[in-house]
Amino acid sequence: NTRLKRAIAVNEFNEYVRECLSVVGDIAIRPMMGGYLMYLNGKLIGDIGDKKLFLKRTPASDMLQRTLNCVTRMMAQGR
Image 1 (spheres, helix red, strand yellow):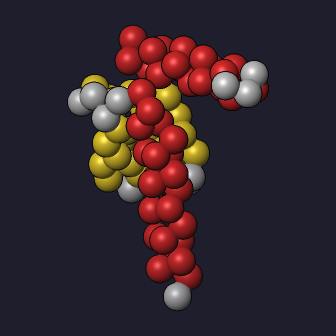
Image 2 (image 1 turned 60 degrees about the vertical axis):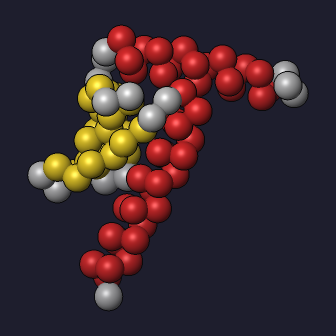
């Protein structure tokens, strides 16, 4: 069933995003009006739709971006 396969793919993408971003804090992804809202430590920071992540510009999402940039640099340096 195509609808079931799409739902599984969306859930896998949401879980992947949650796992990747959980290094910076508590990530919660909640369904909302056909898409998903994403929260970092209880604060809305973005949404997920069509397996794409959109971040809202907030102090929390700015902190997330800085942390991910730092982790990416450390991984590139082999730390």
